[in-house]
Image 1 (spheres, one colour):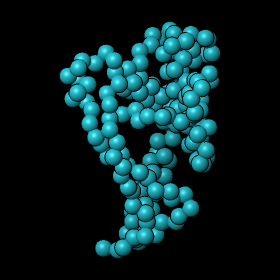
Image 2 (cartoon, helix red, strand yellow; image 1 turned 120 degrees about the vertical axis):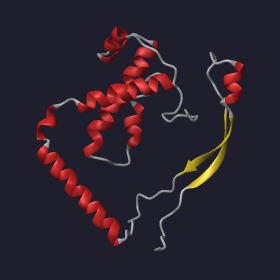
Image 3 (cartoon, one colour; image 1 turned 180 degrees about the horizontal axis):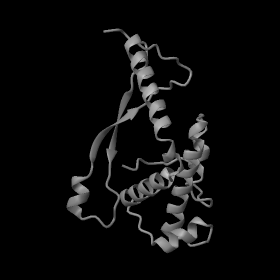
Length: 165
């Protein structure tokens, strides 16, 4: 097996505290405790040195994707982004215990001042649209895409201060 000078991930210990005020005492106790969070090394300035078999597999996978794209050109007009946005929004909202009526979400999505969860979910959808639009131009400015998910009146920094799940 080849040796690698690629930096390994690290771990740091954290304590998880269940924050759902509607959860039962038993659920809060069951869903708390220590966990190891992953610490990812900075790799943006590094160039990976991959074995030839990995490069060959990547080349084969790329060729297969190109062939798939060529054969399924008619699928390009389908709204995959909308499907992804709905799925991500529904999942995130469920995880974060957010509920919102479709009418309020629609109004918030067009800029109406609805307040509450509707605006929060609408901002999450806006952030996902920005991420999808930026997918062809990836850079290190992820914070700008994250900012649109935050409340414009929020006094907290533009980064989450706690782990969500």
